[in-house]
Image (cartoon, rainbow, N blue to C red; front, side):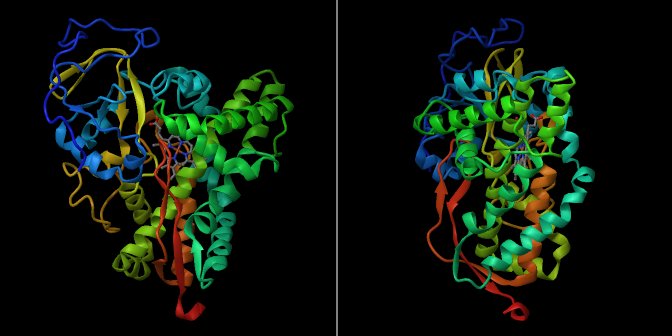
Length: 431
Ligand code: HEM
């Protein structure tokens, strides 16, 4: 169990009570020295390699400490419990994404033209630009292609002995679907997984992970810059729509750059994380696999339960626009606050028996796709891909077995396996 100082932090020079605090400009304020009075302090680094490998004891310790906790290492506030995360995500006027989502200043600066890091009307405008192409209705024509790809992927892996659940199954889906949809040309595709993971890593705090993945994140940005400048995008894609609007003078090249980062970077690791987690969970819980075989109508609920229990996106930050109460304390304007989706999704105050993988539970309230105005724009696609893999597995696989030691992919923001040796034992009819 992670160690904490177990007590309450001393008061700090910043605002401590309603009406007395002064709104601070987040860009000028620098890093606060300590928390406001009454906020418990957590000293272990939840972004250390060990904590990334096994974050759950840290999350449990944070939830036990309080509804808001000061992370001493990052010098930010964290919301580890369900109720506060959901309430904060619903209050986008107080919890702002600009200057707030990434935990380091360089990413906050580089990402400032993205949908993820914008607020209010600017955010609406950026999101409306393309999110309509990801609604369930707009995605319907893609369904046969996704199903066919899942069939091919699963049939290719079944009965083949030990395969890698990540490279051979989970990554195959987003890598085949999203680049075409977004309009990424054939070149550079072999580097997409590495690049997109690096972009996520760089949204974390300034640590070794961030430094190591910096060059890859910059390479992706440079590549995207050249695509946007040359308008080198696939026809009939999301990017082609943007290019048409650039030519009509409605958008700029920067919008085209933003599109690739907005829609490609978050679509690969996250979806692969969900699919690999599903393989892992069903392998470890054969009773749940049996149940799914008997009741395939539970597939959509099972996807929610996988995302709840093994949330691919651990946490993102926000910046307070004004002094904001959380529980009994008033957090100062300008403070950065971490939305701990993965911890909220295991909060024992909200979920009954939260550590249990139970595909019959109603997990529709899980926060793994976020919530509110910044709720995941690509969740419909992620659900389609994950469900298609599960349905193909149901058709061809008797049981899933873990066939070796899995390895986590170390990343500041993404929680997923880097390698997951599995054996897909063929269903009798398919053997
Ligand atoms: C299992 C897969 C996925 C998970 C767990 C996931 C998770 C999330 C979360 C938690 C957010 C909220 C960020 C915030 O609160 O600031 C988000 C936003 C977003 N996601 Fe996803 N995501 C997934 C797949 C995808 C895919 C496939 C795409 C694109 C094709 C995508 C595109 C986006 C975009 C554009 C946003 C920003 C929305 C906004 O700021 O308005 N995501 N995602």
